[in-house]
Image (cartoon, each protein chain N blue to C red):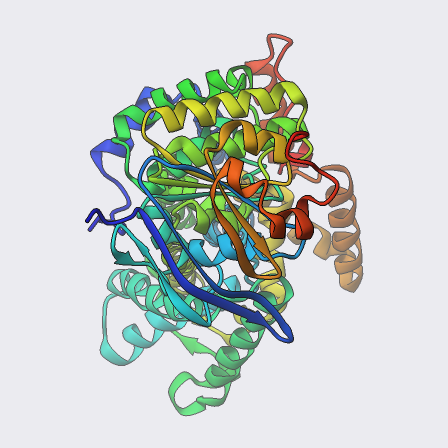
Amino acid sequence: MRADWRVFNARDIGMVLRISFGAWRRQWLDLALTFGMLILAAILPLGIPSIYWQGVLTVTLVYALASTGWNILGGFTGQFSLAPATFLMLGMYTSALLVHYRGWPPVAGILATLPVTSVIGMVLGLLCLRLRGPYLALTTVAFSEITRNLIRFSYNFTRGDLGLSVPTLYGMEGNRLYYYYTIYLLNIAVILAVHLLMSSRVGLYLRSIRDDEVAAAGRGVNTVLWKTMAFTISSSICGLAGGYYVHFIGLASPEMGLLLQAGFIISMAVIGGMGTLGGPLAGAMLLYPLSEYVRRFGIQYMVIFSFLMILMIRFWKAGIYGTILNIMDRWVTSSGSAPALGSKYL
Amino acid sequence: MEVPLLWVQNISKRFGGLQALSGVSFKLEEGELVGLIGPNASGKTTLLNVINGYHTPDSGWIRLRGERINGLSPFQIARKGVARMFQITHIFPRMSVLENMLTVGYAIGRIPAKSLVHRAHEILDQLSLRDWIYEPAASLSGGQRKLLEFGACFMAAPRLALLDEPFAGVHPELKAVMERFIQSYHAEGGTVFIVSHDIPALVSICPRLIALHAGVLLADGPTEQVIRDEAVLESYLGSYTPSEV
């Protein structure tokens, strides 16, 4: 029996190195471009003295992490779930409840989000196995609403809409930059893990499911296993983002599980570039600070923000980061003969 | 007595009011090259779907080297060495040509991982797709896509290759490339089962033919015999005369 569940092994890594600048050229280019953005993200808060904007940048990276998690499922595997914010909320409550009722330290609470949201994600994945397109999306919406309302109505346990106060990771007096660089390191770790995953044979399986699930099964891909795995990994990353977020803002609230939040997380991946490594990070770095900036225009900010989103989707279908990646990919390969990698392939 | 590679016994399949297959039975021996013919809606693709595990038969059983495979899922059957080329091209458009090939190789696991890239290059060379190896499969022409699916079918050295209309809508030059490939695979001991309406092509490469009509097996035997079979002539070949094919 082949060890199908084994994600990484020496064979895969050898494969990546052997043909890394051939078949995996695009993945390596994606990684290089993503690290370019990460370098920018490393120096960005140092030039911003405002504590408020340092906080905005920290939340930006929380969203980037959640969006990277969703991208594994929606971008690479083609399973359009509308539940990323629900897993973020579940991550928040997992850590908050453990810290509040069991007295766990925040770090332990954050780490506990990984197994808890993995299991819930796996169960949702198993429920959604045979669903596609709108059926899958609606099932995840139903799951999200059930979960959010269960938390709201379990007032005695979760304090419902009032929210549950928890200690912050570095204390109220903690330097904002500590929070920023911690989530920054989490983003780097997750981005590297996603790169390894997508450059291995598992990446081939997930993308083959996205492109043609029926054909993938006919060619030996265990679609049940890998779709469930994609749900599990994606949910745990969103959960981790939530676990960290709750110990940054110090309050777990069911507001985070609203469909609007899910739309926000998904928009980041779509506008950045679905199915690319750095797309969600680029989308988050663009969208979240922008949404904070346009707040100054009062209640109309949603109109301005939504209009900008429509413009971006209209003109950069592959996403802003995805378009740049395509141009660079074409530039690297173009000896004149290679067909261009246009947005129609994304 | 040697166990046949594929043993299809009394397979029936009904879709609502349509009896797609009725008690179909036949055997494929190791190393055979067999053609399956029949008019439209005679059950050819349904038969392949049942062998592949996409449809569960209502009755009967299918054995691969003596092991029952009906009831297994498509990916399990594929891993036992049954490869499938679809009538309507199914490639992974957003993946590169090489990635399309490697996905099959890794998923089936019959070829050592270290040889996969070499094997993919070899097959793509034979199919004249070498220049597109790192390009997205979506950038290929219709005929090239068909060739890619054809190549992916042979990527994992299948025990049995099921080809559904491989020559349909393909330029004569590409068709000749496919025919040569099938013949060389067969010469190396591979087993190939081809569904096609291209009777002259089947007659030229397949020593044995099976004919289906309205879900019933009409004839099974040497090609020369089947194309002269009265029932086959009446129900399918019609205007063709044996000398024409």
